[in-house]
Image (tube, rainbow, N blue to C red; front, side):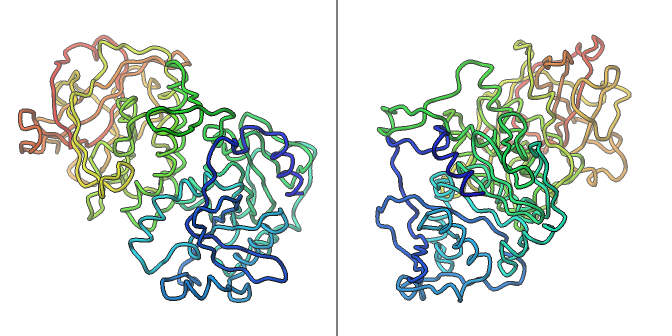
Length: 506
């Protein structure tokens, strides 16, 4: 069944197959699974170009991985017997063989886990490894490597009921889709095979299949967890020669303002999914989505700034924190970035969909970027952030000049016609109540006035609190920190009395 779906895709879907003009580069090390008569081994590829598969799985808590280190690498280059590997790895080898492939990339086996340098170098290439693979095996139902792909996926198989209509949701126990890191592992490969606790699901950039309805594809539209249409962005059918970079690149698919808005809407939709997943370490918030950000930048030439894009920066500021709080002991990024929120796995949307479906924008009243300063770890714009500040120019007014705002969660923009709605990023900071306990110089910064596809008009605004100090990079401006997001109704009484000013926001 899975072989039939894979063969159909390879033979008929141009967008899912690697163009012969594009170079095929394997990971630095890969598991050569051999055959039944030859044990697997770790292969140092040294420029070898062959098709390969990848594996996504849960490491689990308390389980000791059979990791590759600088001490056992040479031994494993000779042989790595299947019996020494956990069931998830053994089953992944079986699947790879059944589908006619010889090479399989597994992070714990192919990255030297005792070498910080090797981990940094290889983790920076993970997006390339998943994008360059032929398919990704996702052990969704396995809580850790000891569970096995087949055993865990068979857990609810006795309840499986077949239908003649395509399935639009991934059903069954799914541990992998709870992890933030694995979102990019699901989207970047041209094909993904989910082994859940209830059924097998197969997804490519063109269509999706489910074991529940194996003969009927779900084409376009809302294909299984939106992944099929998400994959499509990274697997276009044509290529171009980039003179500046001196290499073949996928043909640009962003043409015109509407297409650009569609691409940025895709990013906000991705963040809505990413923000509801779990991360073990706060510092991984940017690295955990770096692979998708790199591919997005490669297709759009947009500039990535702490989780936002300069070309749609003002819209990117319109995330909703729902009072979750900024409670990490580490510096995670500027207050204007969604990545500073804690906890990251929240049930609500960061971005609301009416916000991304913009028909009309009042450019005269749109806040603009004056300057920006960002310093990343190891000068990697997609990695951890050391410091950041943006200077914006827009319409502002003091918080205390407007009466009767409602403070609490709000759903979307334009839904409240006669009242200001405001949601704080960290409600715990204002135990005495807001706005009574707010700094007297706290302001609203109007971001934009727009109309969405449904005809709703909205005026989103940042709620900014002065820090009481001068910014070291932009000392001529008052320094603020973001503390919330507000939505103004488009009534005349709320659109008058704003003053244009420049400010630095950390």
